[in-house]
Image 1 (tube, rainbow, N blue to C red):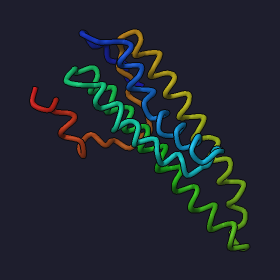
Image 2 (image 1 turned 90 degrees about the vertical axis):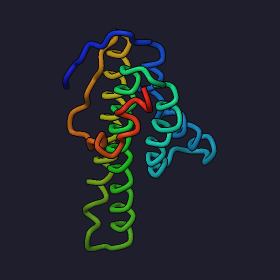
Image 3 (image 1 turned 180 degrees about the vertical axis):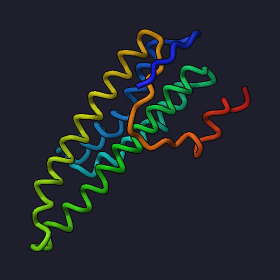
Image 4 (image 1 turned 180 degrees about the horizontal axis):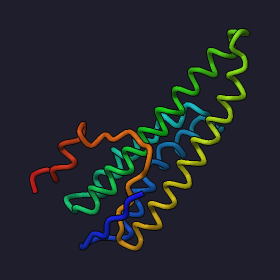
Length: 151
């Protein structure tokens, strides 16, 4: 993980940016009435819908938003892929060995997201930017966010 100290930060906003993927996921749990694996797909929605507006035009905010989006896309995509594989394995007896492997993968993805988000939020309090390791780098697909939207 690379730490980059940035000046002109707003620690509370940066912490909220890092925690923004939780909001639609928890709302989905409240609507459905129980936790469901497929709700992990909602992680990027929070990063886009809540994190990006909170970032505004601040450089530190944009970097935190990009990192939150990349982590949410990686974990949400992994959860979706695992959910699809486990759903198929439940119907096809020949690949039923993938059920416990998928369950373990789901637990690992959720735990990694929790730990990496907590680390990013903790570092945001100190005004540091946390670049997560082993995530899908979506920066090249988000030029409107990396350029500062006209600033």
